[in-house]
Structures are given as structure tokens and as C-alpha cells.
Image (tube, rainbow, N blue to C red; front, side, top):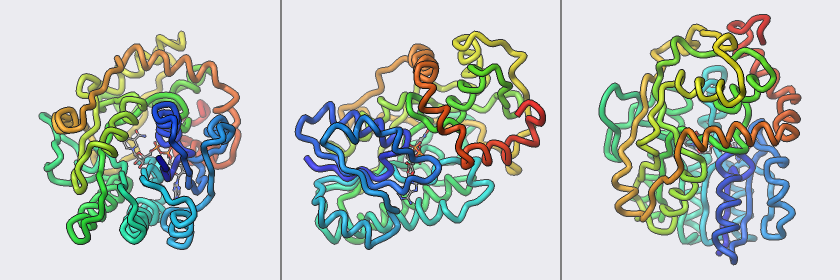
Length: 344
Ligand SMILES: NC(=O)c1ccc[n+]([C@@H]2O[C@H](COP(=O)([O-])OP(=O)(O)OC[C@H]3O[C@@H](n4cnc5c(N)ncnc54)[C@H](O)[C@@H]3O)[C@@H](O)[C@H]2O)c1
């Protein structure tokens, strides 16, 4: 089984590679990753030493790179994790989101069709549906994204849909909830808060922290993606979330404070930098995935979140090296500087 995993040096992609190498003894994995600020070879060092993984640096929107790689590596499957993935960064600069999340997906779809790749799985997000006060979004709910990030992801989803309808390209799309777990780039909410709390630094909470997010452990998400790759129907979309884990941000922060041994004095409430309304609640119904894919999430949120905190405690060499890089420091300073002031 030959996999081309794009964005495999990032958070979810690297977890997915570990999962399939364990699950399929005959799996050979090629990773294509542009190594943006979010992609690090240190995240996949163990994989590169396994003898079953080959790494190429390149961008998914570059047809020369993508076509050359597919001709050389002849993958059965393409699984696309490559993305500009941070909402807050998309508020500072959004052009790269269009390039990767729309043009990049289009380039992979074209290559899938041209080279007769057996199946492409495109990883998307619940954020394409926008915000919902009550009830849940289903796969046929309208697409109403509210940020440059989520609108670029919606653009990629629509490319996939149209490619399947127009050309019968064998693509399946999954939409995941908010992920947590090991190897997440330390500017995203959970690792950012954990590493700051471990160092006794203040954490910035938007407003009262009442935004609701549905969390899914990264391995539950990766298992759902793999189930959709093998059991999903081309042209279909599948919500991969964990409905039992709908939490207000302040509740997540409470567990993080407890597990790091800190208290409320380290929480600094800040004005929400999103000028439009901050998406209040994301929530997805996952009946279709559970019925058609033979998948369901199994991990308990609180237990797994506490395990995740311990993982960051035990893997400080990895994240401390990243937090020393200018790409990390500059973003934190430019985004949070005015809110955290001397607490930065
Ligand atoms: N993190 C979440 O909570 C979450 C939830 C639902 C869906 N998703 C989706 O899952 C996917 C992976 O998310 P993640 O959290 O692992 O992101 P990430 O930012 O940790 O990793 C993205 C990876 O893609 C690479 N990349 C970026 N632009 C590229 C390009 N043009 N060509 C090749 N590689 C490129 C980066 O170097 C990085 O390794 C994304 O599509 C994201 O939208 C994420």
C-alpha cells in the first residue's frame, strides 16, 4: 500500500503517518511538505528513520513537483493534510491560504485524475459551516465560513466536489472538529496554553471564554480519516467529530490549569481580536460517518487532555526548539503583544 501524505510534517499529518505505519505492515509512505513555519522535520524524525518513509520538500500547488512525485512514487492513495491552518494567522495575511487551501487542492485533484490514483482523501474542517447557536451541522448544511482560513478551506472542498461531479475524480472529503493531542504546533490554543502555563506565564482568553468548540483527539480524527479513505464513497463528505466533547473554552482552561498545577491568576481575559463576531459555537452531527464508515471516536476528553498535557511536559526539547524560532516569536509578539503587554 503506497501513500502520498501531503502536509505530513505537521500536527495531524504526522500522527496519521504513525497510525498507518502501525496499522498496515506493508504501508510505504511518501511525505510531501513545504516545511512552512508549521512543518518541522523534528516532528517526523522517528518516521524518517523507520526505512518506510520518504520525505520531499515542496508545495502542493506546484504541478511540476506534484506530477513528478506521483510518477516516481506511484501512490495508491493521496491523503491531503497540507494547509495554511491557523485562523488567527489568516487575519494577519490571507493570500497564502488561497494558494495552498484552494489552488493546492485543485492541483492534487488534477494529478489524481491524470495519473489514475486510486483515491484521494481531502482533510477539511467543521469551520466551513460557520457558527451555529443550537443544533448541529450535517454534511448537506450550507457552507457559511466566517474567516479567511475557513473560507479558503471551503474553496478547497468545493473544488473537490466539482471535480468529482465533472470528472468522476475519486475524492472523499472529511470535515474534522477541533483537534488536540501530541505534536501540535505550539501556537494553537491547547499547546500554547499548556507550554505557557508550564513556564508560569499568563494565558490570553478571548472574552469570557464562552466560545464552544467540539474537540476530537487527533488519533480519533486520524482513524476517521483512514476509515473514510478506505470505506467512504467518492464524492461524499463525512463529518469526523466527537459529539460528546462540546466544551466552552473556559472549561478547557480549567482542566489545563489543574493538570499544570496553576490557578486562575494566570488567565488574562483579552478583547477578541476578530472584528466580526467570533464564531460562537461549532457542532457537527456524525451519524453518517458512524453509519457508513464503521468508525466512531473512542477517547474520553478529560483523560486524553490530561495525557496531552503530560506529553508536552515530557517533550519539551521538541517544542522549546520551535518556540525559539523567529517565525514563532514574531507571530506571538505581533498577535498577542498588544493584549499581553509585559506579560508576553
Ligand atoms: N488542527 C485542527 O484542529 C484541525 C481540525 C480540522 C481540520 N483540520 C485540517 O487538517 C489539516 C492538517 O491540520 P494541522 O493542524 O495538522 O495543520 P498544521 O499547520 O500543523 O500542518 C500543516 C502542514 O502542511 C504543510 N504545508 C503548508 N502549506 C503547504 C503547501 N503549500 N504545500 C505542502 N505542504 C504545506 C506545513 O508545512 C505543515 O507541515 C488541515 O487541512 C486543516 O485545515 C485541522
